[in-house]
Length: 419
Image 1 (cartoon, rainbow, N blue to C red):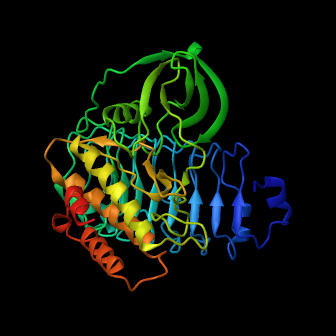
Image 2: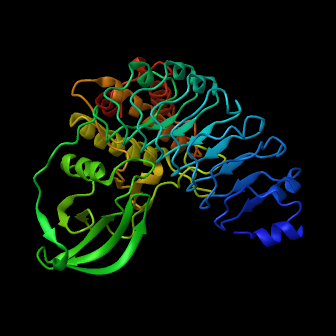
């Protein structure tokens, strides 16, 4: 719900927990401090702010969004907000980030699409950090202090200037979701593939929309069949550049659990022509929310048999082994990126976070194995019968995949053998 400055000034919003105002604000409305005893979520995204007063009076503030404003430096206004755990400053113009200006309570920091060349050494003090999207900046390296971020589970480094990723990053005990395409250290491969013109396609209806683009049901005259077309938005998303997602999709090759790429689109927008998937397929899970942070959410009451979990795990391990054989890291191995039908047949989709890595480096695969272990954890928690030998076997596999020491985890081919 969007509120107005007029409502705020009238006092009619007194006691509310969530406030969102979009009115081209150039100054922080001081009347917000009248909500200090109740306000938990503040969203002033889409305004024209470039500075903030000290916000420590907002003692109950947990979540704050200031995306799409005009900040050129990271605000120091949050230092005293000791309950603040989620802070978003996406799509500003932030170039500088001073030392020791954030509360240690931060676990989710969104700095996508800014102009940061470096992070402060003090960032490593944020030991509760779980989720750190940094795509679309100018970073050349990461501070060594980040080795202390033992709770970091997801980091997005795509579309920066990094020539290499530090080894310690790949060895962080909980890191499961990593994206680094669009950097010198992840070179996209050029792929020869059939090209279709936009005039060949008859758009039918919109099937869905994600961070990187929209997917349509389409009839292709040349292919003489119904296909799906993904039209990319073209901007930097939280995962990286659209062209890198396209290259990963086209480079992945064919696998029974991948949606087949039929052609690329010759159009002012980047686009892919994909195999049309029966609408009976649904997402296995839903994306994380504010509370779960980096872990997926699921429909209430969702239950699997242990045999169904095994079938899903076999397919996802198989397609993951296939991708890593091509030195491709999916980067977003989540239930919400898996399509499934009533027979538990699966497709792994959404390559927005996919990255190419140097052949033979198994550390990347072992990071993704942890994501697989987390998925298996989610699925096994939704099995009602927990006494079978198969359940115990899969529980052991889950534990092996979630080893805190990444080198101790199995590879996907090992996982397949055990399944």
